[in-house]
Amino acid sequence: MKNALNKLAKPAALVIILLQSINGVCQTENSDDDYTLDSKSKSTYYKTPAEEKEDNKVYTEVDKKPEFPGGYPALYKFIADHLKYPETAKMKRIQGKVFVRFVVGKEGDVEEPEVVKSDNPALNSEAIRVVKSLPKWIPGSHKGKNVRVSSTVSVNFKLDEQPIVNEMPETLDEDDNQIFFFVEKMPEFPGASDIFAVSKLLAENIKYPEEAKAKGLSGTVFVQFVVTKEGNVANIRIARGVDPLLDAEAIRVVKDMPKWKPGEQSTRINGEKVWVPKNVCVTVPIHFVL
Image 1 (tube, rainbow, N blue to C red):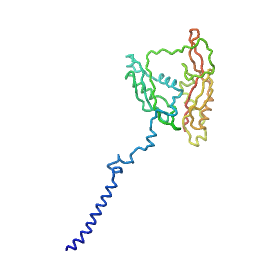
Image 2: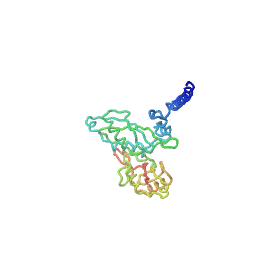
Image 3: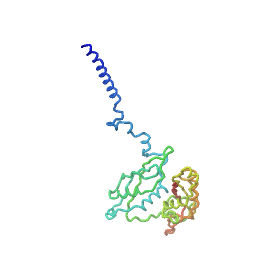
Image 4: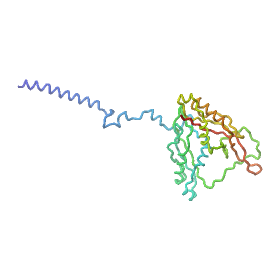
């Protein structure tokens, strides 16, 4: 009888040892770093790749800063033209500046605007609204690629603002070749109310290069040029291109523009205000969309 029991006990002991061994393996493999139904947050499957973090990084120092089409004068003119003074602030005669920080995305879009300094909270909402309405910028770049860049702009709220008159010399003896980036009366293109309307008109006259179509090329070409005192287009260059095929077509369509109404700056001659035509640098975005 004892021999029979000993014979049965050995397989049973073997089964117990096997079960303990298997259980030990499961416990060893089921570590805190592994993917399980109860520990998804600990799994590497759910971690954000380093490349994605880098891709979304917001820079403050870059090789090339973002640019508003036409530069800061055009930026502040856009803000002034589109600002809607809050009625409550107007009634209470509230004035001041609101500093808004935002991110210029890799495609030039304005993202994540926030107030960082304000003279009065009653002005904040409108400052955010007008910054959100800004059109696309020329994006910033770092180490050869477009990146997200932090930028700050001040939104000025001022009631009963008097027109600015620049006091100039009594004579008009100036360098005829001087080029301005901003004048009191900016150049005007026939049939367009602002630079973005100009961009739309130019896009309608694009002849999309067939080779560019075949290659699937698209994007926005920024063309910079001078509107002379006579209203002619001169000194055309690519401020930021996409591809030589699209860049060449952008230059062609700008060259074919009719005369502009030239920009003007006020001066005083013998105490009288006079408007004088000036050479003005202009930047226009031209969109190529397939």
